[in-house]
Length: 247
Image 1: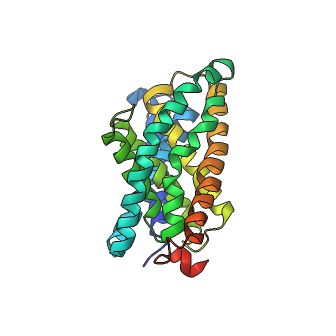
Image 2: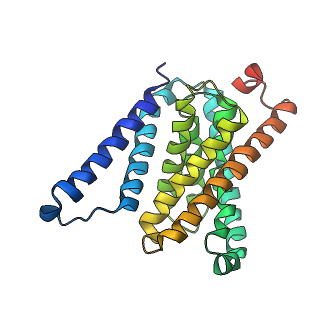
C-alpha cells in the first residue's frame, strides 16, 4: 500500500493549480484579463491540495475491511445529524459576529470532527476523506442549511485533513497530529466559504476568520475528537479496530 500517494497527488495538483493561475494572471494577464490576487492564489492552491489528496486516497478505500467501512458510515451518519444541530448553535452565536467579526468561527471546528475521529480509530488511508465527505452528505440529506455546497465542503475539509495524516505516513495519530489535521480542515472550510460567500470581505476579516477556524479545528475537531474516540476505546467499543491494537 503506497501511503505517500495522497500527499504526492496533493502536492502535484496544488502546484499545478497555482501554476495555471500564475500563467493566466501574470504571464498572459493582458490576453486572459485576469489580475493576480494573493488571496485567490492561496484559495486555488488549497483547493488543488485538497482535491489531490482526495484523489490520491481513493484507491486505498477499496482495501478497507467491511467492519471499517461500516464504522465510517455509521460515524458519518451520527455526525451528519449532529452537524445539522450544530447549525442552530451557529445561528445563536450570530451576535458574536456583529460585535467581533470572525469570533463566531471559533465554533466552526465541530464540523470537521468526522475527519479526525474516523482516521484516529481506523488508521488507514482515506479515512478522513471518506468520513468527512459522508458526514457532509448525511447533513445535506437531513436538510442542512447550505445545500449541495455541504458536500464540496466535506470533500475539501476531509482532503486537507487527509493530507496531514499522509504527511505523517499514516503512522502517527498523537494529539498534535490530530489537532493539525483539524486545523487543516479549517483552512479548507474557509476556501469553500470564500468561493461562495466571502469573496467581498476585507482581508483583515478573512485573516481573523482563518485564525479562529485554525484554533477551532485544532480544539473542537482534533482535541475533542480524540477525547470522544478514547472514551469509546476505554468502553471496549473499538476492540476490532487499529486503535485497540496500537494504543
